[in-house]
Amino acid sequence: MRLLEILPNGDFRPTGKFLDNAVPRYAILLYKWEEDGQEVTFEDMVEGSGRGKAGYT
Image (cartoon, rainbow, N blue to C red; front, top):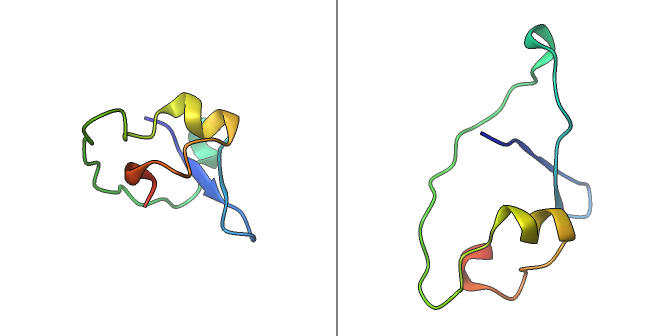
């Protein structure tokens, strides 16, 4: 599982690694598979790309 941090400007970024006792509060969001390459991948999130994909919303 990966955690994403929401930045003040509305962007996302993957969080760093946490020690067992230092994990922040988090929510589990629904994941929906998109057709035709419209799914946002972990690589998209790391690279800051994928905003134009349907799965981003």
